[in-house]
Amino acid sequence: MKPQLTANYTVAGRHFRDYSLQVPLDWEDPEGRQITVFYREVVAAHRDREELPLMIYLQGGPGGAGPRPIGDAGWLSVVLERYRVVLMDQRGTGASTPVTAAAISAFENGQDAAGYLANFRADSIIQDAEAIRIHGYGSTPWVTLGQSYGGFLTLSYLSFYPEALAGCLITGGLPSLEPSAAGVYARTIHRVRAKNEKYYRLYPQDRARAAALAKTLAAQEHYLPNGDRFTVRRLQSLGIDFGMGPGFERLHWLLELSGDGTVISDALLQEVQNRTSFASNPLFAVLQEDIYGDGANGASEFAAQAELEMHPEFATDAQQLLFTGEMMFRWTFEETKLLRPFIPAVETLAARRSHRRIYDREQLAVNQVPICAAVYHDDMYVDAGLSLDTASKVGNLHAWVTNEHEHDGINDPSVLRRLLANLDALGGPLQR
Image (tube, rainbow, N blue to C red; front, side):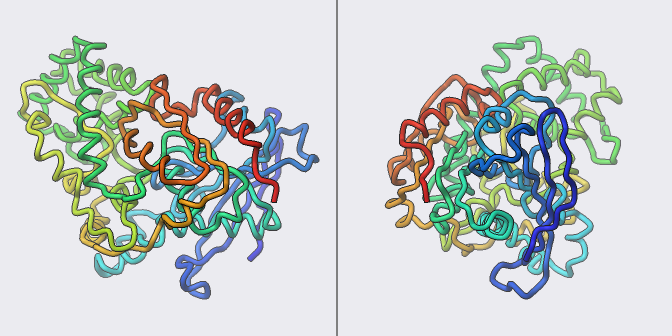
């Protein structure tokens, strides 16, 4: 198992090396089917020949590919000041062997397809990272930076391979150690409602516009360029962006394309398709609730839909239209062309009561690896209360709580500078 160098180049003051690595689809069957995991090493060009410490970035998601750097601003520039950085395309995403609608359609039944998808969870992702560390970097311990779902991956990594880690940084992704999709949505639904209220305070003209657009869509069928029907529910799902810094602005400018709410322009339809088709990241929808499966903690059973049905204010015909958050429903798969082939597998996953373990609570309780986490008080996706409960149960974890950032606070360079300073204050990364 040796990584293959596929590209080697310098652009805009950064040196890049691209690699592919063959790994088992199922780590419990190492001699079975193999897939490719892609990763990219980035280093400040003028420091390429130095012995720099390593950092691996654990991407948010689930189902998110590693970032493709553009420009010299943001978190990457901050960490490149001191680290050689590995950007991994998590299995099933980006340039790694992808999970697609066509690939899932090839399975004879939902049980087989679900068995395949079960290999794309946290336990497999961190074993891929370990393979990269061992075979690509001579087993050198590294620092992790986990954004959003990357925080879930971080605790999984600490649970089973603590010796691999010299330090951990987490931004907006400190999960509950008693994972439950239903428990998460019971908390975040109230924050989704609050985000709607804030949105309408910022853009009061959009109250009437959104309500009119909902009535227009309910009264007459309209279709996106790919043939999907543009429904009120699909309109509401655009609220997933409310948890990000510029999310309110992005939705406002999109609604502006509808005029007073009665204009269904080609530009509007194209933009809605771009934001809701899941063409580039089907695993984000497919595994959204499955990431909470840990051991025998039960089935997810479309928890988001069950929670939403208890809140009639989110009804499609409510007087004031409310947008939903980071939630996937049965209809999401039924009404989205590229997700329909996943329905049998998703239904099987939703009914599963037992899963591979993703956390070792005993190991986390005695953890010695320094962890510095940013907890965003008003985070719409990851409940701050659950995050702080976890912080009290994981050894050597230091949480910084702030209400100055949304879930994408990592894009503000000050966040990483603060976390790196916190790590330095703890003595810096472990020297192994």
